[in-house]
Structure formats: C-alpha cells, structure tokens
Length: 364
Image (cartoon, rainbow, N blue to C red):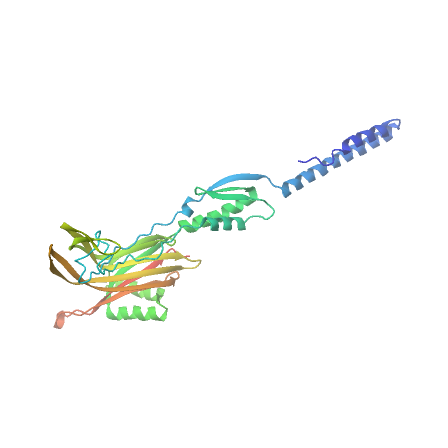
C-alpha cells in the first residue's frame, strides 16, 4: 500500500500537546477523545484507500493451462481403397496396393483432414472473456497456455477452456445398418427421403424397425461407430481378394517403369460397400459429410505378359458424395440395391432390396 496521509500524524500530535497544555481537566479529556476519533477516522480512510488500490490493480497470479488435447488433430480413419483397374493396369502398376497408377481409381481421395484448434484462435477466445480493467499477459508455449492475470480473469479463462475441452471430447455414435427388405418398404424409404430433403424422419425409421421386428425385413449387417468432432470414420462391408497385378514396378509420380521384378506384385482387390463419414457437431444436430462407394466384381480374366500371367479384374463402381444436416431422431438413406426375383411358380421369392441406413446418436 502506498502511504497517503501519514504526514497528518505529527500534526495531530503537536495539536494534541498544544490543546492539552494548561487546559482544564474536562476540556483535556474532551479534546483527547476528539483526537482519538480523528485518528480512528484516519485509519478508516487509509483502509478505504487500500481497498481502492486492490480494485484498481488486483493481485496477479501466474497459471499454466494444458492445451495439448485442443492443439492435437483427431486421427482420421479412412476407408480402404476401392481400386478400379483399367485394361492396361497390369503392365504398369504402382506397388503397395494403392492403385495410384495404371488409371486406377482410389477411394482415399479426401479433403484436407480436420486440423487442431488454431493457437491464435484460442488466445483470442480467452482474451475476449477478460475484464477490461484487469491487465493480462498470456502466450502459448509447447502446448501450454501461460497466463498472468487476476483471479477473476483466471476464472473466466477456465470457463472458456472447459467449454473447448468439452466440445473436443464429445463423441457421437453413428449406427450403420444394412437391411434386406421388400420392395414396397424400400420405395417408402426413398419417398420419405425425397420429401425431407434426403433425411429419413423418425416416423419412417420406426416403421423400418417394426418391419424388422415382425420379420418382414431383416438386419443383415451393421456397426456402431464412435466419432469425435470433425473426425472421419469408416464402415466397409465386402470381400478382399489378392491378385497378380504386375511384374513391373513403376514410379509413383510419372508412372514410368522403374524395374522389372522376378516375383509378381500382389495387390488387394476390395469389393462391396465402403462408407466414410465426417461428423461436425452443431448447436442442434450434426452436419455429416459422407462418401459412399459400391464396388462389384464383374469378371476377372488372365492376361499374358512377357514376364508371366497377370490378373485383370473388371469392376462395376458406384460412388456418391453428399453433405447433410440431421437432427435428433433423424436418419439417412445411403444406398439401395434391388435384387431381382428368382425361382418359378410357388418357389419364386418376392423381390428384395438391400439398403444402408445411417442414424446418429448422442445429439443435442
């Protein structure tokens, strides 16, 4: 505390001596009481000034906050590649099974992965919550926020950081269901999806669940995926088979032949359905960025080369990509494939369809 009116004390002492000297006893007592009252008042004034000092310049505290989970990007889980070799794919194919050369199609073409929170953005959010009258010094170093400010500002900073951590640690459950159902139910799902801008409302999902419970439809496969905010996860249902792709190793950039190998290069051919989903939690609901690829093997032939025989598979590929917003209880129709009726007479079975439905859980 900075001394303010302590110079008044000597003056009060001299004044008391002058007043007390030669005065009657009762007058001296009265003056002594007045001096005591003035001294007590002075103490009160000094205390009030000290409180004003503390309000104007509060005590600063240095605290370090761990931001490593906020600054670390979520690990994307990408679906396996769904290669589509061309007729010339066997002569010049990149090793490693990525199918990058020879005109192959790769399912793993993706946007930039969801990055971590920007340090400058965190500093801006924390600083915006501070009391303007309280000075603050802050910086981010080695994944930690170093902050020197008042206790009130520290409480506000913790509130902001707790909210960021809660959003970062929030998980969504994505239920993927593969259903076999009659044609009329598939058409009902498609019509409901068209009427609701691609979204399956809760009523049609209840009808689907009732059909499964009654035995009119069947849940033939499914998965429950857990996704962090802006993290990509995948679901793959299908077959994997190895095949002889080439006897020539090529460069990854130009595709030109680098060397001829004595042992054939073996790659993996994947068929079926691959689904990639990136979820972005919203204040109400979730935004989903999806890519769905269906790959079907049509035939696989053998082709003679100067170095040996190679496999040349042919695929039928269907790929879709979309973004949509879902609310609580909503679902999404991702894919539908109709199976032709087979058999004769009484053995002829009804036409069935295979559909894939996605339902998010844990929405606000």
